[in-house]
Length: 402
Image (cartoon, rainbow, N blue to C red; front, side, top):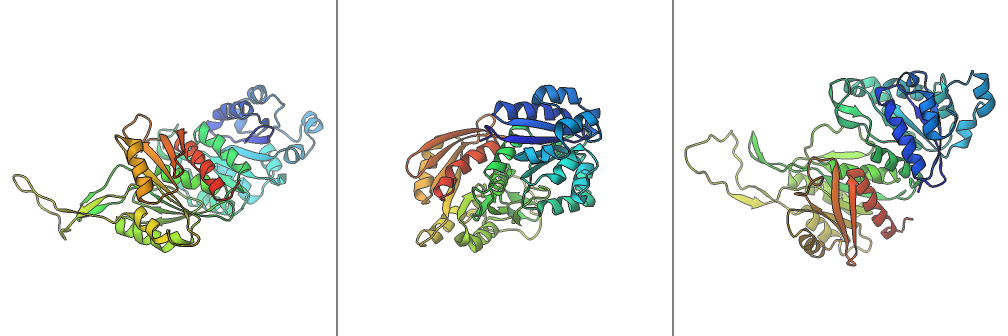
């Protein structure tokens, strides 16, 4: 998808600037031609000579340098590029882009650029959470041609833990690929369930599972990057930061079912990635249940099957959504997934061995087999965003999207 594409890379002044080198190298490996612009602050973290060596071309650092002006022309980079990627997009750089400033090589060329833009934020988590940064993000996200990837969450270079890490290389590359398939799902409505559900036993205890919602949110992010209008019905997974699509928060299976049933008939695709709790206590104590000596018995009853109920509702419709399920299993994975595919009337199912290394709950990677109702099978592995991209590669043609 990147073969022959002309990509401008604007490097911002953050500690993650050193990762720009790997990013540029990978873009070129996938066939893109790359030109780099750098802010003055970025040059404190990685040298223009390094970026010149990796990109294979001179680096734009100063429009007031006569030799650079002679080579580039004042707006050459903006007119040359098919897409513009900014990484790391620091809090300062995001603020200046939002304000429409043009006071360095990156902001000047970006302001003159008319094509798709990908911003990859990276900063301290307190800076990311600051209301000023969130206001800037809201303004930028309201611009249709501006897209985001990340930030990721985890340990930061300064010792803090939280949102603010530059996204992994694979996610950055998929973000760029999304710029060139951005219209693929334009006009399509996508409904996704993600995360776990919780079923209360008493005010302080519940039945649940380790799902973090990472896979479902990756599916949503790729769909959004490809132009879809996305709604995610999200179980209790904690803070996921500011997301560029609609998120409906729920806790129980009943709440998830209600949210899905209100929306599924108007969707073009329903992707059920959520790990819905299969059982709930028959009785819920109004007060914290006290432990006693010896065994205790808890009577469980089935929760509603969200995917089956939604599928049953739309099957008879003249125009129904494409139905995609996930099967999280620990043995006989393909057999169980095929049974679920048939039993629930699905178009595709993603078979996921959650006991395998690098797959399943709580990790950033996955290994799956995507099975079609026509008997086809496709393997996919990598980051969850890469797996999500492969899933949409298979779903899009079924929607008439190229």
